[in-house]
Image 1: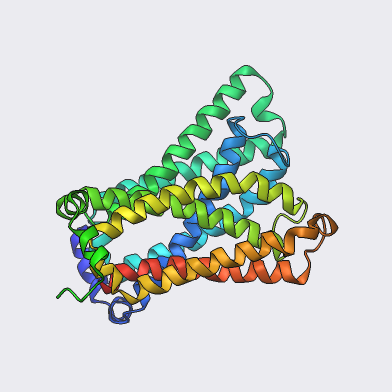
Image 2: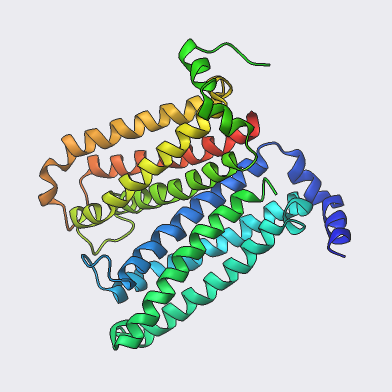
Length: 161
Length: 164
């Protein structure tokens, strides 16, 4: 079924127009990578603070307030550029196990980021209020860091598997 | 077709480790993933400092405080990206040597280094005067030039894969 959808999508005028423009894929991929850079650096700053590895500069809440809206903006651009790349080469993405794994990890990362943001928005000291919360915060931060690393690796491996 | 390249480039390509990377199915993708991961940290952290210099982002933070918290990560990630990049380069050295996007990327990195040196040696000398406020024009220019160069570095880097 997915194969049929890929064949149909690859046959559309839009997909063929994108595929025939030699500059299209590298340009969209470049924007995609730049946005990944934006997400990774902002989440890393928040995760390292959540892990209490870094402590200088603004508070966790202040950092979250200024970064998280940009993280969501970058994620929307990542979704749009990702869809454009999928329209161009549907089979390369949708039938690819590295791509599918990447999508599951992206969905998980989005949920974790949302959980982190909702908690810190409600209560600035949420993640430091008790030993249990600190542990939960650390676990969330480690999961987020591992997911970021694996998402980048899986994204690059789409080209090879 | 292998175009002509200087002797040290072809010698690098013939090293046992270069050939091992070229022949292995998994080494190149692994080093490439590491390279991409490290460069996202480099570009992300550099962009954050550039946007502060441009007066767009992190406006409530001192420039010096932001850069001192970012630069250790930038340099660590840069070292990783450089090592992984050298390993990728060595596997097909003469091909990359003759690749136009690769050359443009290297020139842009050189310009980025010069831009950074000029900023640190001259522009940042009187940083205390504008550390908390709007950066001086020279600092804003440095931020804009850096951002443009790093975007070009990512784009030309991606283009290498479509031209070799």
